[in-house]
Amino acid sequence: MAFERNTQETYYDSIIKQGYSRRDFMKFATYIAAYMGLETTMIGQVAKSLETTFRIPVIWEHFQECTCCSESFIRSDHPIVSDIILDKISLDYTLTLMAASGHQAEAAKHATMEKHKGEYILCVEGSVPLGDDGNYCCIAGRSAKDILIEAAEGAKAIIAWGSCACNGCVQAAYPNPTKATPIHKIIKDKPIIKVPGCPPIGEVMAGIIVHLITFDRLPELDNIGRPKAFYAKRVHDSCYRRPYYDAGLFAESFDDQNAKEGYCLYKVGCRGPMTYNSCGTIRWNNGVSFPIQSGHGCIGCSEEDFWDNGPFYERLTGLAGFGIESSADTIGKVAAGVLAGGLAAHAIAANVTKRKELSDRIRRGKANEKKFES
Amino acid sequence: MRSKNYKRVYVWELPVRIFHWINVLCITVLATTGFIIADPPAILSGAEASESYWFGTVRFIHFATAYIFFFNMLLRIYWAFVGNRFANWKAFLPFSRKMRKNILHVLKIDILLMHDKTNDVRNISVGHNSVAALSYVALFIVAVVQVITGFGLYADNSGWWLPDLFSWVVPLFGGDFMVRTIHHVATWFFILFTLIHVYLVFYHDWLEGRGEVSSMFGGYKFVQEDRLTTEDIEDLNENSEEMESTPAETSPSS
Image (cartoon, rainbow over all chains, first blue to last red; front, side, top):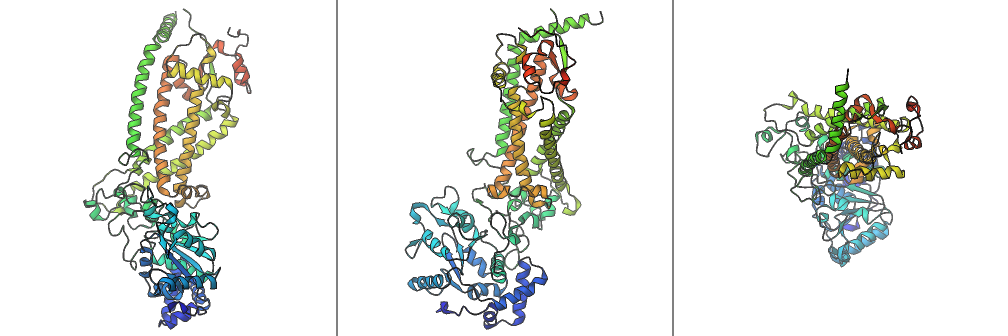
């Protein structure tokens, strides 16, 4: 059975056993170090660490999700990346990819949880529904919440894969019927690495795993808990169309000449300026492209509540409670108009009601004018 | 009929006036560039990006002006502690019964346009009236919101420690989207405030004829002679140097 692998085997051993050459291994170390944002002198450390550390057991839980995170992962650039996840990190339990099923699979998971208590990494893909006692997502007869709490208890660290696990994604969109809840709102006492995105970039996922095994500690996280190496900059700041933005050259619609020229998609709703991710630098599908390069604005999939933040193809500032169509500017213009009208009415009323004071003052002023120089 | 005897009172000191006009310029520039950034005009051209940088320049003006706006605000806060009684922070918050009474009076006379039964000179404020003062407190709060959200959005573009002090803002609101929405909506409060503020300044100048409009240029307002040395001036009297030249023998108003 796949789960009876010898975990006392280093990453390097198993990579070589898999049929890769040492040269392939070094290429991988160089490549992943670059993605992790390390400088070249650190490549040796990455290689050495992969040669000497034993594989960390990983339990990968799937809750309310679409498996796009796993899909993104197994399609990441370098074959070793997917190998390292699927084989080398000893993925002891993952619903989508394991060979075992039913009681066997659950038994294997519990065996790992007991044997490696306090050592294994828990990867969570998907949010956890808390509505109706968690009945919206049950696996092996237990609710996602129970499974998560049980699995998290012995975990060394938790990686929240994708927007579902980080902020709830589409199933947490208003009105959130299942009360889909991100991981950090349920598990409070474990270090959690958030890797938002729908899905996250495969190389980002691999980079984080390699960072964990190379340095035996969490990558540096920002104040939301995302690795700084991948989420420190807005997509906008690394976008190849950024010069068009600075030049004020924008596509007005997706079929105009400006769009054909490849101008900035800011005015057709691109969320790049509000989205923290590395799509602009790492890109997708072996670095082939990313949404903006393919002519579609960023939808901000790695940002919290991106489904609720208005239409993807409009750059508007909506206001909750005023209806979807009314933007802040419409309301502002109406308010300013009403106010101006009110002030004009007030001005007229003031002149009418205070006419006595006014005429008195004018009379006194005129009298003084006559006395002047006399 | 005798015309009333007016005395010139130095109300708005030079730093207050400078603050006011810098603030006016900053808000105008920030709102204009802000709306351009939010919804840039459509330009149809075959230009290449390397040929121009106007949008970047608009953003630069917005950021540079934001710094001026911010430091100008800090200066005003400083002056709220060292300036004269009309600039003092205490003049803005209705701590005293007198100021609370003044709120009602202003609402009745100036907003609802009712008439005073008795003619009490003390009802006419020399500095800010209490309602206006509260509106400046509200404006200050909105300005703080703009500073926090603005620097919050800007923090990531900058390596300087000052904007970085605001790097907690975006995580607090869950993302840039909400921060930007607040920043955008708050701009409208400045516009609505400006409409009301300018109208009421004209209103007071027109109906009271005490130099309301020019006071923000020259600093002086004209106050009825009876008004000086009445008890309400005395109970505010912390730094009365400016008043020393005025005749003290006028009888208190009955």
